[in-house]
Image (cartoon, rainbow, N blue to C red; front, top):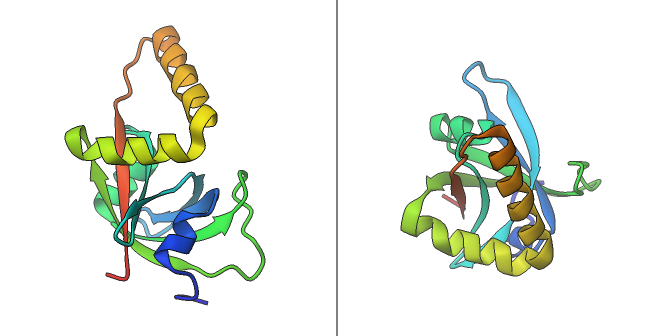
Length: 136
């Protein structure tokens, strides 16, 4: 059921299952938050060292499906293809603002938890954004 959901509809979901591809061809499914960025584009934030970032760098073609927080796909939900790109710096800010605006206090709690974790583990995980373009 490809194409039965618009970019605005998929971006309005609370969670989507992001499916990326490894070099060996295996796929990896990850539930992520998503926020509309306008103009038929959506995005989400993640840590720059996350596995999905590496996979997207190698293979930008991804699929999305509405799901719950645990990645369980809604029965009969459509698969929506997209092309993903990694953004940092000034390009990251609109994605960060959109996700923060959509998820509010939940997003802020995740940010605080991440900061504390980075202090305890003495690592610095820079954030980046993933921009999703549909219909390319």
